Amino acid sequence: MRQSFLFTKTRKEAPKDEVAQNAKLLIRAGFIHKEMAGVYSYLPLGLRVMEKIVGVIREEMNAIGGQEVTLTALQDKKVWETSGRWDDSVLDVWFKTKLKNDTELGLGTTHEEQLTALMKDYIASYRDLPRYVYQFQTKFRNETRAKSGIMRGREFMMKDLYSFSADQESHDVFYEKTKQAYSRVFARLGLGDRTYVTFASGGSFSKYSHEFQTVTDAGEDSIFIDEKKKIAVNKEVLNDEVLKDLSIKRIDLVEKKAVEVGNIFSLGIRFSDAFELNFVASDGSKKPVIMGSYGIGPGRLMGTIAEVLSDANGLVWPEVVAPFRLHLIALFDKEGKVKTYTDELYQELTEQGVEVLYDDRDQRAGEKFADADLIGIPYRAIVSDKTLAERVVEFKDRKTGDVTKISETELQKILAKKAN
Ligand code: ATP
Ligand code: MG
Image 1 (cartoon, protein in one colour):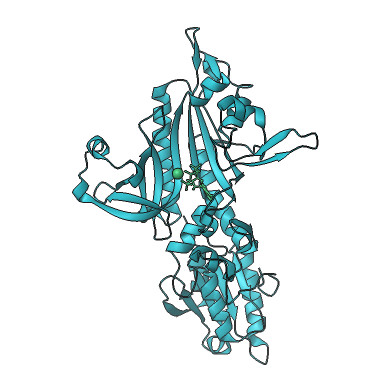
Image 2: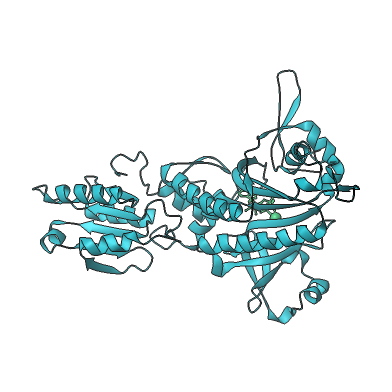
């Protein structure tokens, strides 16, 4: 994409009411636009990052047998009455609305109810199990605190997967598989070394649920980490019993602030019981389906990456989710030689399938560099009359700051390597 064509511009200042570092950076760099507290629009650069995060998660969910759907945000009050969660005193984050005839509707905060009701149409026998259904869908939650930028939105994207199994054993096997898949997602997104499988409260059907907590001071949770075992315990459930269950000692644990980027939960028959989602087993008996739910917040992940991988000059995207792979910067000369050369290089790279943001704007070098630092594309190639004379391009790694002079052929070689 030509930067002269991109409608967004970088800004020196974030909105005055924005307190979160992730949102400040993403707004200044033109990735998102703040509509109101906890409500953000995704602009071209931000949408590209979001789609790449979604792409990584989708690959991992498909690999464990997930089938993708899109359920609706408008939800029937009846399904929520069935589970007993319609009342505001039970679920305090509701956004509700009404039809013209006064029929009440809910804006989906989550989709256990709706999907369980839906699966009743498709699950009848043991032959219909197991089933793993997931979606990327907008959730609405009237969060009381919305001070963490896109890490806590009132309208936000969630990947939610739901498992439907015939018995506890097969549920447990899939639950473990999902845990592994989640670890792969966070590793691929560059957060592996600071993301911990964290024991959290489990509800009535299992002792614990598992959160995936990424260490950052911007997080709202406190976790206690056992660095050797690479596991953690959420402060909310830390007690002697948990320590014993996990064979860990209080003295080995370090308390850190963290953000919950994912969450997996055994639901048992909580919903299949309420909705009478049963199946006929191979011996002819009727049994309730065992369920699980598995969430990841792609927007929260984008915010987390912006928090933990940025530096004083701006964003630093890992290759897999960067909006573009190369930031090609032309420092124009009077004769137009640089323009001719860089236009052609841009054309060639684009044809080779390299995602290039081409800074073809008429601006001073200093401004172009500052913008490039803020936007945070992993690789930068600078073309000037000097580099042309030397038959090289100046190549800069955003993360390390290393600058080298390389030939066009070398540049193409580096860019041909795929991100993970
Ligand atoms: P939290 O404890 O942070 O409020 P939660 O436990 O309510 O989150 P879940 O309902 O399990 O979250 O949602 C699954 C995932 O969706 C979370 O792990 C998180 O990544 C993401 N998520 C939850 N709430 C938000 C939000 N308000 N904004 C952005 N992402 C969110
Ligand atoms: Mg939680």
